[in-house]
Amino acid sequence: MGRSEEWGRGFLKNIILIGMPGSGKSTLGILLAKDIQYGYIDSDSVIVAQNGKLLPELIRELGNDGFLDLEARVNDSLRVMRCVIATGGSAIYRGDVIERMKETGIVVYLKIPYEEMERRLGDPGKRGVVLREGYTLRQLYDERAPLYARHADYTVELTDGSVEEAARLIRETIRHEIEE
Image (cartoon, rainbow, N blue to C red; front, side, top):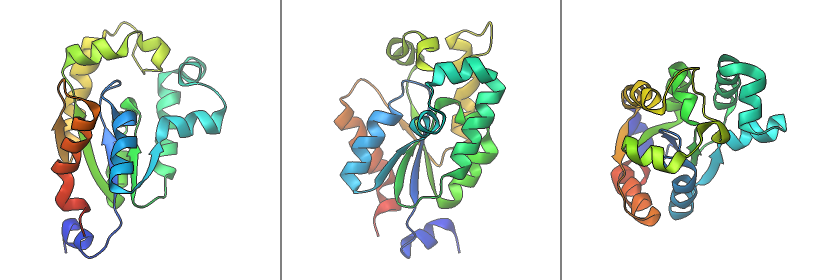
């Protein structure tokens, strides 16, 4: 029996949002969860709460690889059902964790154009973005985009619409997965 058939029989799946920093995972995750009456978890917020430090501070202290390990442990530890989970943008570097998360849900890639990400993001250092030394935002975008696409069950291309319109687009894209 396929995953979709199991879900049609009442499986309480999660919706896992992936995408670049600034793609709207947190904002849209909250709206989507409220709209479909799901719980909501922001994995970056879990990391901050568990460690008592902001993301930029953790990245400085642990280094990129150490932070990615921490992020992977947090994502791997989430044992929830019927939740919208907004992952950190760098979660995709641990594809094995994303694949394990798929065992309890569907992965939705919130795809935004590079220019929009750059506009929304501002200073990546202040946002807690895992960015290798010497890397530009463009290089980061070009590196991550195919990883997001590879692990996504669905890709939702977001443009200049309102956040309400974007949440509606996500809901419409995955409607058959969440209706029982």
